[in-house]
Length: 547
Image 1 (tube, one colour):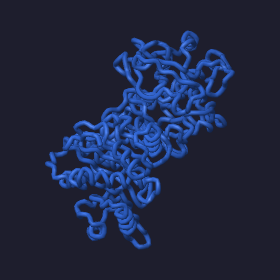
Image 2 (image 1 turned 60 degrees about the vertical axis):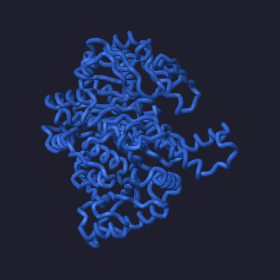
Image 3 (image 1 turned 135 degrees about the vertical axis):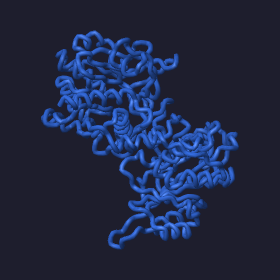
Image 4 (image 1 turned 90 degrees about the horizontal axis):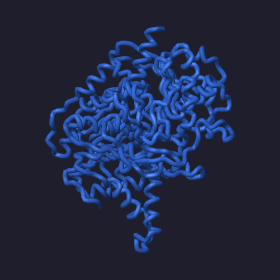
Protein backbone atom coordinates (compact mmCIF):
# COMPACT_ATOMS: atom_id res chain seq x y z
CA UNK A 1 0.00 0.00 0.00
CA UNK A 2 1.22 3.51 -0.84
CA UNK A 3 2.72 5.74 1.86
CA UNK A 4 -0.15 7.80 3.22
CA UNK A 5 -0.33 11.11 5.00
CA UNK A 6 -1.38 10.09 8.55
CA UNK A 7 -3.89 12.95 8.79
CA UNK A 8 -5.90 11.85 5.72
CA UNK A 9 -9.34 10.45 6.56
CA UNK A 10 -11.45 8.31 4.22
CA UNK A 11 -15.25 8.46 3.85
CA UNK A 12 -16.84 5.63 1.85
CA UNK A 13 -20.26 6.41 0.37
CA UNK A 14 -22.57 3.51 -0.50
CA UNK A 15 -26.20 3.39 -1.59
CA UNK A 16 -29.10 1.13 -0.79
CA UNK A 17 -32.81 0.40 -1.35
CA UNK A 18 -32.96 1.74 -4.93
CA UNK A 19 -30.57 3.25 -7.46
CA UNK A 20 -30.54 6.89 -8.61
CA UNK A 21 -30.82 8.33 -5.11
CA UNK A 22 -28.02 10.78 -5.84
CA UNK A 23 -24.87 9.39 -4.26
CA UNK A 24 -22.74 11.53 -6.57
CA UNK A 25 -24.52 14.72 -5.60
CA UNK A 26 -24.43 13.72 -1.93
CA UNK A 27 -20.68 13.07 -2.11
CA UNK A 28 -20.05 16.37 -3.91
CA UNK A 29 -22.21 18.32 -1.47
CA UNK A 30 -20.54 16.83 1.61
CA UNK A 31 -17.13 17.62 0.10
CA UNK A 32 -18.18 21.22 -0.57
CA UNK A 33 -19.38 21.91 2.97
CA UNK A 34 -16.24 20.33 4.43
CA UNK A 35 -14.33 22.76 2.21
CA UNK A 36 -16.43 25.58 3.63
CA UNK A 37 -15.02 24.61 7.04
CA UNK A 38 -11.47 24.87 5.74
CA UNK A 39 -10.69 21.24 4.96
CA UNK A 40 -8.93 19.99 1.82
CA UNK A 41 -10.89 17.31 -0.01
CA UNK A 42 -10.53 14.79 -2.84
CA UNK A 43 -13.36 12.81 -4.46
CA UNK A 44 -13.18 9.42 -6.16
CA UNK A 45 -15.62 7.14 -7.96
CA UNK A 46 -15.45 3.34 -8.14
CA UNK A 47 -17.83 1.93 -10.75
CA UNK A 48 -18.63 -1.81 -10.62
CA UNK A 49 -19.44 -2.25 -14.33
CA UNK A 50 -17.06 -4.29 -16.49
CA UNK A 51 -16.49 -1.61 -19.13
CA UNK A 52 -12.98 -0.19 -18.98
CA UNK A 53 -14.57 3.28 -19.06
CA UNK A 54 -17.92 4.77 -20.16
CA UNK A 55 -16.42 6.09 -23.42
CA UNK A 56 -18.04 3.50 -25.66
CA UNK A 57 -21.30 3.21 -23.70
CA UNK A 58 -24.54 4.58 -25.13
CA UNK A 59 -25.56 7.97 -23.68
CA UNK A 60 -29.09 6.56 -23.49
CA UNK A 61 -27.85 3.92 -21.02
CA UNK A 62 -25.19 5.75 -19.09
CA UNK A 63 -25.68 9.46 -19.62
CA UNK A 64 -22.84 11.88 -20.14
CA UNK A 65 -19.19 10.91 -20.41
CA UNK A 66 -17.18 13.36 -18.33
CA UNK A 67 -13.62 14.10 -19.49
CA UNK A 68 -10.80 15.27 -17.24
CA UNK A 69 -7.80 17.42 -18.14
CA UNK A 70 -5.56 14.36 -18.37
CA UNK A 71 -7.90 12.69 -20.88
CA UNK A 72 -9.79 10.25 -18.66
CA UNK A 73 -13.30 9.33 -19.78
CA UNK A 74 -15.26 9.01 -16.57
CA UNK A 75 -18.69 8.75 -15.00
CA UNK A 76 -20.83 11.90 -14.92
CA UNK A 77 -20.55 11.99 -11.12
CA UNK A 78 -17.03 13.36 -11.55
CA UNK A 79 -18.75 16.38 -13.08
CA UNK A 80 -20.71 16.86 -9.85
CA UNK A 81 -17.48 16.54 -7.90
CA UNK A 82 -15.71 19.24 -9.91
CA UNK A 83 -18.67 21.62 -10.07
CA UNK A 84 -19.27 21.51 -6.31
CA UNK A 85 -15.69 21.32 -5.01
CA UNK A 86 -13.70 23.09 -7.72
CA UNK A 87 -11.08 20.32 -7.42
CA UNK A 88 -10.03 19.14 -10.89
CA UNK A 89 -10.49 15.37 -11.21
CA UNK A 90 -7.67 13.19 -12.50
CA UNK A 91 -7.14 9.74 -13.95
CA UNK A 92 -6.50 8.46 -10.44
CA UNK A 93 -9.99 9.54 -9.31
CA UNK A 94 -12.02 7.18 -11.49
CA UNK A 95 -11.92 3.43 -11.93
CA UNK A 96 -14.16 0.58 -13.06
CA UNK A 97 -14.16 -3.18 -12.62
CA UNK A 98 -12.91 -3.36 -16.20
CA UNK A 99 -9.85 -1.27 -15.33
CA UNK A 100 -9.24 -3.21 -12.11
CA UNK A 101 -9.36 -6.61 -13.83
CA UNK A 102 -7.26 -5.29 -16.69
CA UNK A 103 -4.52 -4.30 -14.25
CA UNK A 104 -4.72 -7.63 -12.40
CA UNK A 105 -4.48 -9.62 -15.65
CA UNK A 106 -1.59 -7.46 -16.91
CA UNK A 107 0.30 -8.15 -13.69
CA UNK A 108 -0.42 -11.87 -13.91
CA UNK A 109 0.86 -11.98 -17.51
CA UNK A 110 3.95 -10.08 -16.41
CA UNK A 111 4.62 -12.58 -13.65
CA UNK A 112 4.17 -10.12 -10.79
CA UNK A 113 2.24 -12.64 -8.70
CA UNK A 114 5.03 -15.24 -8.77
CA UNK A 115 2.82 -18.04 -10.01
CA UNK A 116 0.00 -17.57 -7.47
CA UNK A 117 -3.56 -18.57 -8.27
CA UNK A 118 -5.29 -15.27 -9.05
CA UNK A 119 -8.43 -14.72 -6.97
CA UNK A 120 -10.87 -11.95 -6.16
CA UNK A 121 -9.45 -11.96 -2.64
CA UNK A 122 -6.69 -10.87 -2.29
CA UNK A 123 -5.67 -9.83 -5.81
CA UNK A 124 -8.71 -7.90 -7.01
CA UNK A 125 -9.44 -6.38 -3.61
CA UNK A 126 -5.79 -5.35 -3.22
CA UNK A 127 -5.93 -3.59 -6.59
CA UNK A 128 -9.06 -1.71 -5.47
CA UNK A 129 -7.38 -0.70 -2.21
CA UNK A 130 -4.29 0.47 -4.09
CA UNK A 131 -6.48 2.64 -6.28
CA UNK A 132 -8.21 4.24 -3.27
CA UNK A 133 -4.97 5.25 -1.52
CA UNK A 134 -2.85 6.13 -4.58
CA UNK A 135 -1.80 9.58 -5.81
CA UNK A 136 -2.73 11.47 -2.65
CA UNK A 137 -0.97 14.42 -1.08
CA UNK A 138 -2.08 16.34 2.00
CA UNK A 139 -5.85 15.93 1.74
CA UNK A 140 -7.84 16.04 4.97
CA UNK A 141 -10.66 13.93 3.50
CA UNK A 142 -10.88 11.50 0.59
CA UNK A 143 -14.49 10.73 -0.30
CA UNK A 144 -14.92 7.47 -2.24
CA UNK A 145 -18.27 6.75 -3.84
CA UNK A 146 -19.07 3.09 -4.61
CA UNK A 147 -21.34 2.88 -7.65
CA UNK A 148 -24.46 0.74 -7.76
CA UNK A 149 -26.60 -0.48 -4.88
CA UNK A 150 -25.70 -2.69 -1.94
CA UNK A 151 -26.64 -6.24 -2.90
CA UNK A 152 -25.52 -5.95 -6.53
CA UNK A 153 -23.30 -8.94 -7.27
CA UNK A 154 -20.74 -6.86 -9.19
CA UNK A 155 -20.29 -4.52 -6.22
CA UNK A 156 -19.21 -7.19 -3.72
CA UNK A 157 -15.42 -6.92 -4.32
CA UNK A 158 -15.61 -3.17 -3.64
CA UNK A 159 -17.45 -3.65 -0.36
CA UNK A 160 -14.91 -6.25 0.70
CA UNK A 161 -12.07 -3.92 -0.29
CA UNK A 162 -13.36 -0.99 1.77
CA UNK A 163 -14.04 -3.33 4.70
CA UNK A 164 -10.41 -4.45 4.55
CA UNK A 165 -9.17 -0.88 4.17
CA UNK A 166 -11.05 0.18 7.29
CA UNK A 167 -9.28 -2.66 9.10
CA UNK A 168 -5.89 -1.71 7.61
CA UNK A 169 -6.13 2.01 8.40
CA UNK A 170 -8.17 1.78 11.58
CA UNK A 171 -11.73 2.91 12.21
CA UNK A 172 -10.42 6.24 13.55
CA UNK A 173 -9.44 7.11 9.96
CA UNK A 174 -12.39 5.62 8.07
CA UNK A 175 -16.11 6.33 7.99
CA UNK A 176 -18.95 4.54 6.22
CA UNK A 177 -21.82 6.70 4.97
CA UNK A 178 -24.88 4.90 3.59
CA UNK A 179 -27.51 6.65 1.45
CA UNK A 180 -31.00 5.16 1.65
CA UNK A 181 -34.63 5.95 0.88
CA UNK A 182 -37.51 6.47 3.29
CA UNK A 183 -40.57 5.93 1.07
CA UNK A 184 -43.83 7.64 1.97
CA UNK A 185 -46.91 5.40 1.76
CA UNK A 186 -49.96 7.65 1.21
CA UNK A 187 -52.50 5.05 2.28
CA UNK A 188 -50.68 4.55 5.58
CA UNK A 189 -49.89 8.24 5.88
CA UNK A 190 -46.36 7.62 7.10
CA UNK A 191 -42.73 7.20 6.15
CA UNK A 192 -41.46 3.62 6.14
CA UNK A 193 -38.10 2.78 7.74
CA UNK A 194 -38.06 -0.93 6.94
CA UNK A 195 -36.29 -0.62 3.54
CA UNK A 196 -33.51 1.32 5.25
CA UNK A 197 -33.24 -1.28 8.00
CA UNK A 198 -32.97 -4.08 5.42
CA UNK A 199 -30.38 -2.16 3.43
CA UNK A 200 -28.21 -1.63 6.52
CA UNK A 201 -28.52 -5.31 7.45
CA UNK A 202 -27.37 -6.23 3.93
CA UNK A 203 -24.36 -3.98 4.39
CA UNK A 204 -23.65 -5.59 7.76
CA UNK A 205 -23.60 -8.99 6.05
CA UNK A 206 -20.51 -7.76 4.20
CA UNK A 207 -18.89 -6.81 7.49
CA UNK A 208 -19.61 -3.10 7.20
CA UNK A 209 -21.38 -1.15 9.93
CA UNK A 210 -22.41 2.27 8.60
CA UNK A 211 -21.47 5.21 10.80
CA UNK A 212 -23.88 7.67 9.21
CA UNK A 213 -27.15 7.33 7.33
CA UNK A 214 -28.28 9.89 4.79
CA UNK A 215 -32.00 9.30 4.34
CA UNK A 216 -33.71 10.64 1.21
CA UNK A 217 -37.25 11.66 2.01
CA UNK A 218 -40.11 13.71 0.61
CA UNK A 219 -40.96 15.09 4.05
CA UNK A 220 -39.28 15.73 7.41
CA UNK A 221 -38.47 12.58 9.37
CA UNK A 222 -40.46 12.49 12.63
CA UNK A 223 -38.41 12.21 15.81
CA UNK A 224 -39.75 8.76 16.66
CA UNK A 225 -38.84 7.44 13.19
CA UNK A 226 -35.34 8.86 13.51
CA UNK A 227 -34.97 7.12 16.89
CA UNK A 228 -36.22 3.86 15.39
CA UNK A 229 -33.70 4.03 12.53
CA UNK A 230 -30.86 4.77 14.96
CA UNK A 231 -31.86 1.89 17.26
CA UNK A 232 -32.38 -0.78 14.62
CA UNK A 233 -29.38 0.27 12.50
CA UNK A 234 -26.99 0.65 15.45
CA UNK A 235 -26.18 4.30 14.63
CA UNK A 236 -26.06 7.45 16.76
CA UNK A 237 -29.29 9.38 16.39
CA UNK A 238 -27.33 12.55 15.51
CA UNK A 239 -25.82 10.61 12.58
CA UNK A 240 -29.20 9.89 11.01
CA UNK A 241 -29.33 12.79 8.54
CA UNK A 242 -32.46 13.63 6.60
CA UNK A 243 -32.04 14.58 2.94
CA UNK A 244 -35.21 16.29 1.84
CA UNK A 245 -36.05 17.07 -1.76
CA UNK A 246 -35.06 20.62 -2.76
CA UNK A 247 -36.08 22.84 -5.66
CA UNK A 248 -32.55 23.13 -7.09
CA UNK A 249 -29.36 21.16 -6.55
CA UNK A 250 -27.37 24.16 -5.27
CA UNK A 251 -29.51 24.10 -2.11
CA UNK A 252 -28.18 20.65 -1.21
CA UNK A 253 -24.91 21.77 0.47
CA UNK A 254 -26.83 24.31 2.56
CA UNK A 255 -29.47 21.73 3.48
CA UNK A 256 -26.87 19.16 4.55
CA UNK A 257 -24.98 21.71 6.63
CA UNK A 258 -28.21 22.84 8.28
CA UNK A 259 -28.87 19.21 9.23
CA UNK A 260 -25.43 19.09 10.86
CA UNK A 261 -23.85 16.60 8.48
CA UNK A 262 -20.42 18.28 8.31
CA UNK A 263 -20.38 18.80 12.10
CA UNK A 264 -21.26 15.12 12.62
CA UNK A 265 -18.34 14.09 10.36
CA UNK A 266 -15.93 16.24 12.38
CA UNK A 267 -17.30 14.83 15.63
CA UNK A 268 -16.87 11.28 14.37
CA UNK A 269 -13.19 11.89 13.59
CA UNK A 270 -12.67 13.95 16.79
CA UNK A 271 -11.61 16.94 14.71
CA UNK A 272 -11.91 20.62 15.60
CA UNK A 273 -14.74 21.93 13.43
CA UNK A 274 -14.04 25.49 12.21
CA UNK A 275 -17.00 27.73 11.48
CA UNK A 276 -18.44 27.17 8.01
CA UNK A 277 -18.39 29.97 5.45
CA UNK A 278 -21.36 29.06 3.27
CA UNK A 279 -21.70 32.52 1.70
CA UNK A 280 -20.88 31.44 -1.85
CA UNK A 281 -23.65 28.82 -1.81
CA UNK A 282 -26.08 31.24 -0.17
CA UNK A 283 -25.39 33.80 -2.88
CA UNK A 284 -25.93 31.24 -5.65
CA UNK A 285 -29.20 30.00 -4.13
CA UNK A 286 -30.44 33.57 -3.62
CA UNK A 287 -29.76 34.35 -7.30
CA UNK A 288 -31.50 31.18 -8.47
CA UNK A 289 -34.55 31.87 -6.28
CA UNK A 290 -34.99 35.51 -7.34
CA UNK A 291 -33.77 36.00 -10.94
CA UNK A 292 -34.24 39.33 -12.67
CA UNK A 293 -35.82 37.65 -15.65
CA UNK A 294 -36.04 34.53 -17.77
CA UNK A 295 -34.60 33.58 -21.14
CA UNK A 296 -35.43 30.56 -23.29
CA UNK A 297 -32.57 28.76 -25.06
CA UNK A 298 -32.94 25.80 -27.42
CA UNK A 299 -30.62 22.82 -27.18
CA UNK A 300 -30.88 20.83 -30.41
CA UNK A 301 -29.46 17.36 -29.71
CA UNK A 302 -29.90 13.69 -30.42
CA UNK A 303 -29.97 12.31 -26.86
CA UNK A 304 -32.71 14.53 -25.43
CA UNK A 305 -34.79 11.54 -24.32
CA UNK A 306 -32.23 11.10 -21.53
CA UNK A 307 -31.21 14.52 -20.26
CA UNK A 308 -28.43 13.01 -18.14
CA UNK A 309 -26.57 12.77 -21.47
CA UNK A 310 -26.26 16.58 -21.35
CA UNK A 311 -25.73 17.03 -17.60
CA UNK A 312 -22.67 19.30 -17.74
CA UNK A 313 -24.22 21.25 -20.61
CA UNK A 314 -27.46 22.04 -18.80
CA UNK A 315 -25.53 22.96 -15.67
CA UNK A 316 -23.20 25.26 -17.63
CA UNK A 317 -26.22 27.06 -19.11
CA UNK A 318 -27.60 27.47 -15.59
CA UNK A 319 -24.24 28.86 -14.48
CA UNK A 320 -24.39 31.36 -17.34
CA UNK A 321 -27.85 32.32 -16.12
CA UNK A 322 -26.65 32.75 -12.52
CA UNK A 323 -23.82 35.03 -13.68
CA UNK A 324 -26.38 37.19 -15.51
CA UNK A 325 -28.98 36.92 -12.69
CA UNK A 326 -31.38 35.30 -15.15
CA UNK A 327 -33.18 31.98 -15.17
CA UNK A 328 -32.33 29.93 -18.24
CA UNK A 329 -35.27 27.88 -19.45
CA UNK A 330 -33.93 25.16 -21.73
CA UNK A 331 -36.11 24.03 -24.62
CA UNK A 332 -34.90 20.52 -25.45
CA UNK A 333 -35.39 19.77 -29.14
CA UNK A 334 -34.79 16.40 -30.77
CA UNK A 335 -32.69 17.17 -33.86
CA UNK A 336 -34.79 14.70 -35.87
CA UNK A 337 -37.86 16.89 -35.31
CA UNK A 338 -36.17 19.66 -37.29
CA UNK A 339 -35.67 17.27 -40.20
CA UNK A 340 -39.39 16.72 -40.60
CA UNK A 341 -40.89 19.87 -39.07
CA UNK A 342 -40.88 23.57 -39.86
CA UNK A 343 -37.87 25.20 -38.18
CA UNK A 344 -39.69 28.49 -37.63
CA UNK A 345 -42.56 26.85 -35.73
CA UNK A 346 -40.07 24.99 -33.52
CA UNK A 347 -37.48 27.74 -32.94
CA UNK A 348 -39.42 31.00 -33.19
CA UNK A 349 -39.89 31.29 -29.42
CA UNK A 350 -36.22 30.91 -28.38
CA UNK A 351 -33.62 33.61 -27.84
CA UNK A 352 -30.55 31.43 -28.26
CA UNK A 353 -29.68 28.17 -30.02
CA UNK A 354 -27.07 25.66 -28.86
CA UNK A 355 -26.06 22.60 -30.89
CA UNK A 356 -24.03 20.18 -28.74
CA UNK A 357 -21.73 17.28 -29.55
CA UNK A 358 -22.74 13.79 -30.62
CA UNK A 359 -21.65 10.81 -32.68
CA UNK A 360 -23.22 9.25 -35.77
CA UNK A 361 -25.49 10.39 -38.56
CA UNK A 362 -28.88 10.46 -36.81
CA UNK A 363 -30.19 14.00 -36.42
CA UNK A 364 -27.42 15.58 -38.50
CA UNK A 365 -29.77 17.30 -40.96
CA UNK A 366 -31.77 18.71 -38.03
CA UNK A 367 -28.66 20.18 -36.46
CA UNK A 368 -27.70 21.82 -39.75
CA UNK A 369 -31.25 23.23 -39.99
CA UNK A 370 -30.84 24.72 -36.50
CA UNK A 371 -27.53 26.34 -37.48
CA UNK A 372 -29.10 27.77 -40.63
CA UNK A 373 -32.02 29.21 -38.64
CA UNK A 374 -29.64 30.85 -36.14
CA UNK A 375 -27.50 32.31 -38.94
CA UNK A 376 -30.37 33.67 -41.02
CA UNK A 377 -32.43 35.02 -38.10
CA UNK A 378 -29.42 36.48 -36.23
CA UNK A 379 -30.18 34.35 -33.15
CA UNK A 380 -27.22 33.92 -30.73
CA UNK A 381 -25.61 30.57 -31.52
CA UNK A 382 -23.15 28.30 -29.73
CA UNK A 383 -21.93 25.12 -31.44
CA UNK A 384 -19.98 22.58 -29.41
CA UNK A 385 -17.77 19.85 -30.94
CA UNK A 386 -20.02 18.20 -33.57
CA UNK A 387 -22.14 21.36 -33.36
CA UNK A 388 -19.18 23.43 -34.56
CA UNK A 389 -18.56 20.98 -37.40
CA UNK A 390 -22.20 21.26 -38.46
CA UNK A 391 -21.87 25.06 -38.46
CA UNK A 392 -18.90 24.82 -40.82
CA UNK A 393 -20.72 22.38 -43.10
CA UNK A 394 -23.82 24.61 -43.09
CA UNK A 395 -21.75 27.58 -44.31
CA UNK A 396 -20.09 25.46 -47.00
CA UNK A 397 -23.44 24.12 -48.25
CA UNK A 398 -25.87 27.00 -47.83
CA UNK A 399 -23.62 30.05 -48.23
CA UNK A 400 -20.88 28.81 -50.57
CA UNK A 401 -23.00 26.28 -52.51
CA UNK A 402 -20.76 23.23 -51.95
CA UNK A 403 -23.66 20.79 -51.63
CA UNK A 404 -21.56 17.67 -51.00
CA UNK A 405 -19.63 19.29 -48.12
CA UNK A 406 -19.73 16.90 -45.19
CA UNK A 407 -17.73 14.98 -42.63
CA UNK A 408 -16.05 11.69 -43.53
CA UNK A 409 -17.58 10.32 -40.32
CA UNK A 410 -20.84 10.21 -42.28
CA UNK A 411 -19.77 10.07 -45.94
CA UNK A 412 -16.38 8.83 -47.14
CA UNK A 413 -16.93 10.24 -50.64
CA UNK A 414 -17.92 13.78 -49.65
CA UNK A 415 -16.12 17.09 -49.95
CA UNK A 416 -14.26 16.40 -46.72
CA UNK A 417 -14.58 19.67 -44.85
CA UNK A 418 -14.36 17.57 -41.68
CA UNK A 419 -12.15 14.50 -41.54
CA UNK A 420 -10.38 12.04 -39.25
CA UNK A 421 -7.11 13.46 -37.99
CA UNK A 422 -4.48 10.79 -37.38
CA UNK A 423 -1.60 12.96 -36.23
CA UNK A 424 -1.26 15.97 -33.93
CA UNK A 425 1.03 17.43 -31.30
CA UNK A 426 0.43 17.53 -27.57
CA UNK A 427 2.91 18.99 -25.09
CA UNK A 428 5.65 18.76 -27.74
CA UNK A 429 5.05 15.07 -28.48
CA UNK A 430 3.48 13.64 -31.63
CA UNK A 431 0.15 11.83 -31.08
CA UNK A 432 -0.71 9.19 -33.70
CA UNK A 433 -4.07 7.49 -34.19
CA UNK A 434 -5.30 4.96 -36.72
CA UNK A 435 -8.70 4.84 -38.38
CA UNK A 436 -9.20 1.18 -37.47
CA UNK A 437 -7.99 1.56 -33.88
CA UNK A 438 -10.18 0.95 -30.82
CA UNK A 439 -13.00 3.49 -30.58
CA UNK A 440 -11.78 4.55 -27.16
CA UNK A 441 -8.24 5.02 -28.47
CA UNK A 442 -8.76 7.15 -31.58
CA UNK A 443 -9.94 10.34 -29.92
CA UNK A 444 -8.32 13.59 -29.05
CA UNK A 445 -9.03 13.50 -25.32
CA UNK A 446 -8.37 15.88 -22.48
CA UNK A 447 -6.91 19.38 -22.24
CA UNK A 448 -5.28 20.99 -25.27
CA UNK A 449 -4.11 24.56 -25.70
CA UNK A 450 -5.45 26.91 -28.36
CA UNK A 451 -4.34 30.28 -29.71
CA UNK A 452 -7.04 32.88 -30.39
CA UNK A 453 -7.11 35.47 -33.17
CA UNK A 454 -6.40 38.97 -31.82
CA UNK A 455 -9.50 41.16 -31.92
CA UNK A 456 -11.88 38.24 -32.42
CA UNK A 457 -15.13 37.86 -30.53
CA UNK A 458 -13.85 34.77 -28.74
CA UNK A 459 -10.65 36.55 -27.63
CA UNK A 460 -12.90 39.24 -26.17
CA UNK A 461 -15.00 36.58 -24.40
CA UNK A 462 -11.99 34.89 -22.80
CA UNK A 463 -10.04 38.09 -22.20
CA UNK A 464 -6.98 36.19 -23.42
CA UNK A 465 -5.40 34.91 -26.61
CA UNK A 466 -4.17 31.66 -25.05
CA UNK A 467 -6.57 29.10 -23.56
CA UNK A 468 -6.74 25.43 -22.57
CA UNK A 469 -9.92 23.39 -22.98
CA UNK A 470 -11.01 19.76 -22.81
CA UNK A 471 -11.62 17.74 -25.99
CA UNK A 472 -13.42 14.53 -26.86
CA UNK A 473 -13.66 13.88 -30.59
CA UNK A 474 -12.17 11.96 -33.53
CA UNK A 475 -12.83 14.30 -36.44
CA UNK A 476 -11.47 17.80 -37.16
CA UNK A 477 -12.36 20.68 -39.48
CA UNK A 478 -9.81 20.77 -42.32
CA UNK A 479 -7.73 23.97 -42.13
CA UNK A 480 -7.38 24.06 -45.94
CA UNK A 481 -10.95 25.42 -46.19
CA UNK A 482 -10.03 28.52 -44.17
CA UNK A 483 -10.05 30.94 -47.14
CA UNK A 484 -13.30 29.53 -48.54
CA UNK A 485 -15.02 29.86 -45.19
CA UNK A 486 -13.91 33.48 -44.90
CA UNK A 487 -15.59 34.18 -48.25
CA UNK A 488 -18.75 32.76 -46.68
CA UNK A 489 -18.51 35.10 -43.68
CA UNK A 490 -17.00 32.60 -41.23
CA UNK A 491 -13.52 33.01 -39.75
CA UNK A 492 -11.36 30.52 -37.92
CA UNK A 493 -10.66 32.52 -34.77
CA UNK A 494 -8.85 29.84 -32.76
CA UNK A 495 -6.38 27.11 -33.72
CA UNK A 496 -4.03 24.62 -32.12
CA UNK A 497 -0.65 26.23 -31.28
CA UNK A 498 0.88 24.76 -34.47
CA UNK A 499 -1.90 26.31 -36.56
CA UNK A 500 -2.96 22.96 -38.05
CA UNK A 501 -6.25 22.31 -36.24
CA UNK A 502 -9.19 24.75 -36.19
CA UNK A 503 -10.46 25.07 -32.62
CA UNK A 504 -12.98 27.93 -32.91
CA UNK A 505 -15.04 29.51 -35.67
CA UNK A 506 -17.21 32.61 -35.57
CA UNK A 507 -19.20 34.91 -37.84
CA UNK A 508 -18.23 38.60 -37.58
CA UNK A 509 -21.42 39.49 -39.52
CA UNK A 510 -23.61 37.99 -36.78
CA UNK A 511 -24.50 39.42 -33.33
CA UNK A 512 -23.13 36.31 -31.55
CA UNK A 513 -22.19 33.15 -33.47
CA UNK A 514 -19.39 30.95 -32.12
CA UNK A 515 -18.53 27.27 -32.66
CA UNK A 516 -15.88 25.47 -30.61
CA UNK A 517 -14.29 22.06 -31.17
CA UNK A 518 -13.85 21.45 -27.44
CA UNK A 519 -16.30 21.02 -24.54
CA UNK A 520 -16.35 24.21 -22.44
CA UNK A 521 -19.24 22.88 -20.34
CA UNK A 522 -16.86 20.45 -18.62
CA UNK A 523 -15.02 23.26 -16.85
CA UNK A 524 -17.97 25.43 -15.80
CA UNK A 525 -18.90 25.74 -12.11
CA UNK A 526 -21.70 27.65 -10.36
CA UNK A 527 -19.19 29.86 -8.56
CA UNK A 528 -16.85 30.07 -11.61
CA UNK A 529 -19.10 29.98 -14.72
CA UNK A 530 -17.41 29.43 -18.07
CA UNK A 531 -17.06 32.72 -19.99
CA UNK A 532 -18.49 31.27 -23.20
CA UNK A 533 -21.74 30.38 -21.43
CA UNK A 534 -21.83 33.68 -19.55
CA UNK A 535 -21.55 35.64 -22.79
CA UNK A 536 -23.83 33.33 -24.79
CA UNK A 537 -26.58 33.73 -22.18
CA UNK A 538 -25.95 37.49 -22.05
CA UNK A 539 -26.35 37.71 -25.84
CA UNK A 540 -29.53 35.62 -25.63
CA UNK A 541 -30.92 37.94 -22.94
CA UNK A 542 -30.24 40.90 -25.22
CA UNK A 543 -32.05 39.07 -28.02
CA UNK A 544 -34.84 38.27 -25.57
CA UNK A 545 -35.32 41.99 -24.85
CA UNK A 546 -35.60 42.72 -28.55
CA UNK A 547 -38.36 40.15 -29.16
